[in-house]
Image 1 (cartoon, rainbow, N blue to C red):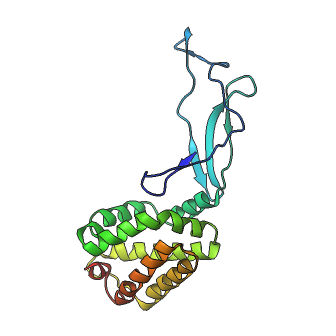
Image 2 (cartoon, one colour; image 1 turned 60 degrees about the vertical axis):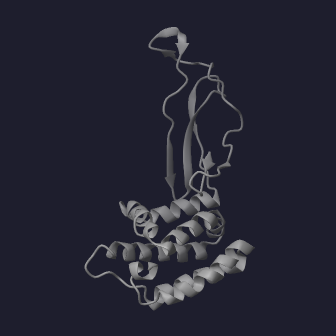
Image 3 (cartoon, one colour; image 1 turned 180 degrees about the vertical axis):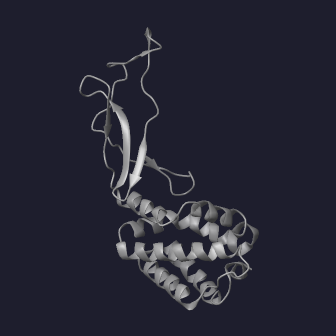
Length: 205
C-alpha cells in the first residue's frame, strides 16, 4: 500500500504480504479460452477506526484466493479518524473553500502552502498523540462550521475559545517540531491572535 500526504509529490510504501503471488497458478480462462487467462478483477479497500482493510489475490495455497489484513498504521488510523469527524459533503465544502476563498487572497494562499509543506510532519505528531489528535479534530469540526457559515447571512466569528485552542495546538506542535515548522508557527501566531472576533473571510483579508 502507498500513501501520500502531500498531494502526490511523495509516497510511502508498505508491503502487506509475506510472499508474492503467481498469476499463472489456477488462472481462470478469459471468455472460456484456455489460451487466454484472466488474472484478477478490481481489488477492494475499506477503512474503519481499526485501520485499512485491503483485499488482494493470493496463490500460496495452490489456487487463486482472496486474502485480506488489517493495516493499523498509526498515521493511517489518524487520517481515518480525522476524516470520520467530517459528515457527508463537508470534505467537499472544505475543498471548495480552499480552492475559492483561500486561493483568492495572499494570506489564504500562504496558509495553503504551509499546510502542504508541513502536513506530513504534523500528521505524524497527531498519529502518535491521541490527546493532540482529539484537539485537532475538535478544531476541525468547529472550523467546518465557520466555513459553512460564510455562505449564510450571519457568518460565525473566531471567538476566544477557538483561538485559544488553536494556540494550544500550535504550542504542542512547536514543542516537537523541526526547525522549519517551529519558524512558521512563530511567524503565524500573531496573525492567529489578530483574527479573534473576525469572520473567516475578514481574517483572510
